Length: 115
Length: 110
Image (cartoon, one colour):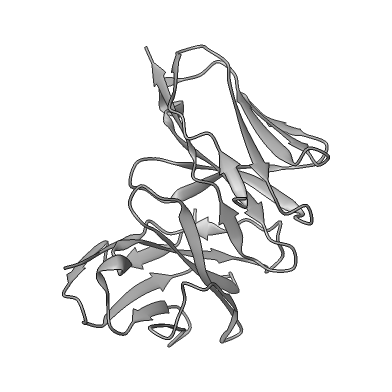
């Protein structure tokens, strides 16, 4: 069964450093997403991406965040200058279509710890 | 009011028990709802979509009550492997964003 993959599984960084989280969505999917989950809290939407453009972003997704699809397979989330409060599990997801009833498939996540 | 509200639990039940979770939502325009399951420190996985007419998948039954704006999940004949956090999820109208509840934790004991 095809699945979303994410690398690295864990990342530790110093406050103020840049991090890039990588995702490989399911190959025939066209819509890509990033969510995050702070420890003990709910999963929160960050951004959706289609046709090389952001289609929606949350208020969490400020100027410190950016997304990119640098080639035909990878989808990345960059945090330019990490803060302590960016420590969380970051999940990438993908779906075939962008309609609300379409299933989003989640990757295993990258656990980011900012010191 | 939170967009999606759930009782965090935990619900402690013995194997074989029937357990039900409810979830309320505030956006009456929402068209799609889901139950996801999340194991500790793992990604959310789709358990089932929730349809207006209600739907069943094996031991799991989901119901949607639009008038009262709540969704339910019923698990029959609980197994040890059902122990997890169950996330009530709303799909926002017109966009692909999923809105998650905080989850209800279920512990099934022998």
